[in-house]
Length: 400
Ligand code: 13P
Ligand code: SF4
Image (cartoon, rainbow, N blue to C red; front, side, top):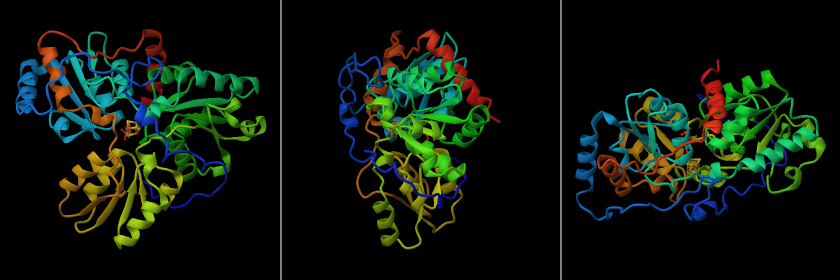
């Protein structure tokens, strides 16, 4: 979803009853190992104390000692203390491409979350190692689609005779297992910047789309950019038999949306938009398409992280912007544009807690381990999964 004005779209039933605001998923992240999900484990080594006054020097020294052997990637939602050491910053798609474009770097240290490091591993060569400084940096949205559930959904569609004509499309924010499933079933990966192009491609291959795992990106793209109505979309709940849908609903749907969402972007509500408009006359509301449909519909502009950054770069001095995305990025954008009034859309704090797991102590620990000749927290995707996931990623890279 790129340059796009958000107003428009028709209303229908069946999409409001999600738990975007209340889901407690983030509270569970990082508790114990769960190999079938994005949840990680505690740090296996001795972390430096956060109070160590020499952390910045230590990170600099370790990075200098590694030289070109290491390349540090930083997602836009990372903390300032980490982003200062990134060789390149970007959204998940840009970072995956950057990793693939550095065949000389022996170690890719990924300051982001688990699914991003997996994609980097899939796109880099055999002899490169991808490192996630804290394995507990998962993603609650990616956790909402587990392979067994998706296989079960596909079986339901097959029993109804509609799997053949359904094209699976998964958001980049999904595990390698899910990307592998999509590749095996001739689908495509998308990001928030190319979701429309991916859906155009998918609807040229089949009659309907199974969109994983972010219901909001799927719905917002289908309704606001592709001309579908809300009634063309159904919400598949993996915790209910047949997704909680009737055979007729599944047969007549154009978009079968997986019941997943981002716990960070899901916090923004229509009230937050109305409230900022009242408080700040003339404000432009700019949001990420992971936000709920009613928020995106009420906003002035909607687009990916990169779109948000470019929009603010191009904005007139003196203009006012309320931005609905992760707070680390919004704070940096406000600092970068002192001539514009850039504010956070919500009144309450809204960091991505799992992105924030990567802090300076973890980065220092990971870099110093590498200097000592040990490879910490390597992310490796199993070969067969990687093969199919790569097909779905390559299909995305080949989108017209
Ligand atoms: P992008 O990195 O594609 O903008 O996605 C936003 C996000 O939520 C990352 O986790
Ligand atoms: Fe996942 Fe949302 Fe955090 Fe991105 S911002 S990593 S989608 S929970």
